[in-house]
Image (cartoon, rainbow, N blue to C red):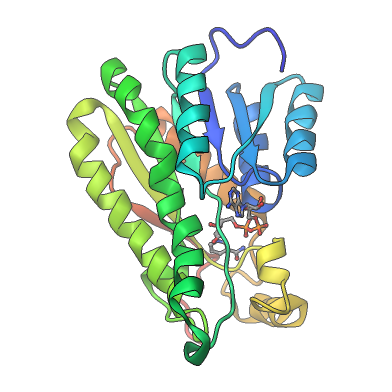
Length: 257
Ligand SMILES: NC(=O)c1ccc[n+]([C@@H]2O[C@H](COP(=O)([O-])OP(=O)(O)OC[C@H]3O[C@@H](n4cnc5c(N)ncnc54)[C@H](O)[C@@H]3O)[C@@H](O)[C@H]2O)c1
């Protein structure tokens, strides 16, 4: 952490150690935010915070498993005490597990919902009272094209959880609008991260390469392609937007193939 955090807006990013969360932490760091990078991956998350500070920004790493209400409550109340209120939360942490329907037990269903959907409200809930008191705040939640348009075979629980994120965004947006808090989301297409490149749980490298050929813009996305839109949604440029889930997919959903 550096000392010059006083006047900077603050952002908490979940799952900030790698992938989209990492790129998002960097984008906010460059934009002048104090970044609270959180993750279950201590080494990766610590490295992201150190890189932001080395680049002249302001950041700290805090360990946070979004499956734990106690951890989320404790961490966010600590940050509320330090900063008065968080200015922005990016609920990004997520897992995608390939599970054929025949194997989709309650436990496997709950595992994904616990991280991808309940994990979001756990972090947002304790941040809201001081945001409301200040009458300002922005929230960006990461859904997926699998939650708004595509069905994903052997990932029914993931598609359901990501569709749930869209409902979370809409409900929160309406309930919080008059408290000055905007809530939006992004539905990424195929983005080059560990999640997408997992042969076991997602497309894997070869299918990701093929996807790049049929995506209208001719490539899969990079984490930075998502991070820049997160930053836009958190900024005053998006001041009249709330309740929206923006598709960022290189034209995949509107394309014909
Ligand atoms: N990569 C894609 O193509 C794609 C597409 C659509 C949506 N998404 C979504 O984007 C978000 C980021 O995914 P990514 O592609 O960067 O994946 P990733 O696997 O590279 O990163 C996921 C991050 O979430 C963290 N995480 C996992 N479980 C956690 C927990 N219990 N507590 C805290 N952190 C936890 C991981 O440690 C990691 O840092 C996810 O919500 C994912 O579902 C990704």
